Image (cartoon, rainbow, N blue to C red; front, top):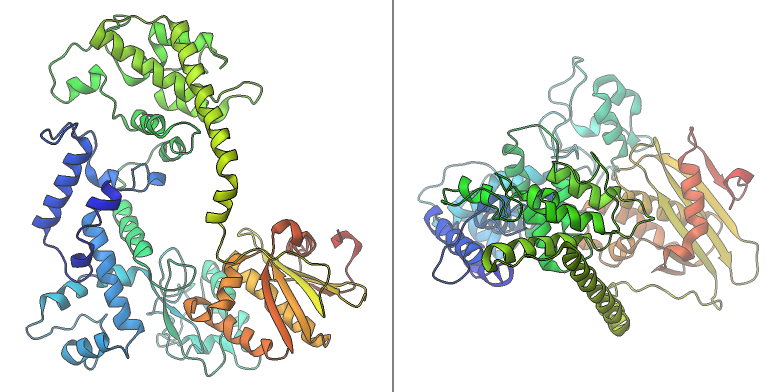
Length: 568
């Protein structure tokens, strides 16, 4: 309700104007009151700061929208349009009024600016975090000033300390004869970390213009979603006050446990301390007895209630989950849940533990509010029964809706069924990439409809920027091999759906414009060309070649004469 209705109501206004802090504070307060309150009149007890709840689930929050950051992401979309679509009426009007001889990212004072322009300008800091200059010819990119290195955040290059030209342009780093990076020059002036990144960047034709792109999407186009996550990332970085054991993986895993949503949420509450045991209530100023109502322990903590109270210990001892002194249960709530999440041996059925935790908590509440003492064996049997019923219902639901789910979740680019009747050639391509390796691997396997023996190729290239870059390089190399073999009618097959989407809608992927231009040029050499998506299981031969060649210590290329150790 909060995510789909409350947080979406002011979206249109926020995409045009910066909402004042007083307004965003009232919106946040209303949503927080709705979340924590048990009814419309009560504000409830706010167990955690709202800004922390706005962190993603992987960061320990609940993924609610921070109104100010979402406002920034929407306004950044408008600023991005001014940069990337300068011929639009929207851009022309603002340019004529506010940045006639500059660009919208420059902080130039304007005479009597409108509130709309002032709002758009407030998103500059967010856009600058993800703005990257993509290398075409490199003539307009300053090596030491412009953000062209795709690190965690785009930045200029880092020198190794040698004396270099402060006005150096990126095109000076490119060998004009090979139209590739001058590796010797890179090693002479750059930090080793940057040498690996720069040498992986694709280089455009000498006439290709350098372009602006967005670093935090694969396609290179700005999206509100990526802008919002970038804004949140900046807040997270400034909120790190302590360095210690990281429990974020525990919080993130609580949402992946196979159990009902209410129990998953309760597991998250346990890990964040948002459970109303008496110790937490007293800490928040509520006058109550701090002792445990079930065993008389002087202090009732979350860990005590669920794992160390005598009735709770009896439940765990009766269950199929093994207990051992100093291993489970312990005095740490985090160690106990870590054990339940990941440390139980596969010989034991641990799937029921979420229900055990839930019904131990319910038994505690029944004792406090109804003065009912439940037998530990009764609690365990109830938990096991509810777990079995829920798991059986999930299996039945899966069987009933399996066909529908497949239909609804079918990707836009559907898998191609491999008909044995085809004309021309069929070329399977794949790439293999690993961040720690020196090379990327590319492989292809080609069959013919006229019964010719299959051909194949494998090559390792200098490691590219990402797995998707490697997939595209594998396709381009396979196309060149087919052209060299004079194969005119070729159906290329890949297991990378993004690659198929990219060549189908090239304007939607500006980050790969260098590859796409080369692809269009090579594509014209074929009389019949297609690129289709297949499953990974149908692409095992090309995948095997790519993975094997990637681990070779030296740069090497094989076409047809494949060594025995690389064959499948």
